[in-house]
Image (cartoon, rainbow, N blue to C red; front, side, top):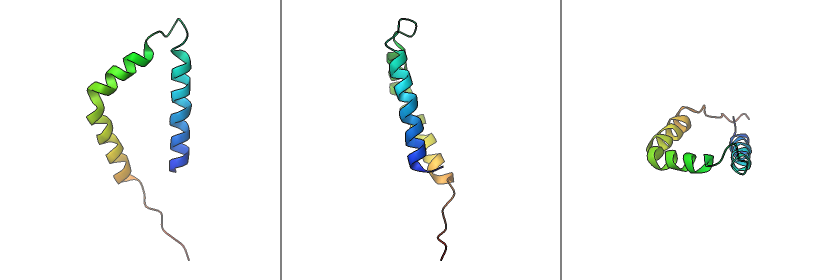
Amino acid sequence: MNIKKNTGIVLILLGIVLTMDRTNDFKGIVSMIAYYMKEYWPFILTFIGIYLLSAPKKSKRK
């Protein structure tokens, strides 16, 4: 998957979460996500690093 597609997916999910937080059923979901991000940010960096290292390299054709 390319970086544009991944960024697009992340932005779509972020938009959905931020929209859900304004409804009464999902009050506080952003604060809950922020809490987990503050507590577990090293794991997120680790998974990003693993993903970047395991991504297949593109070969250039002539």
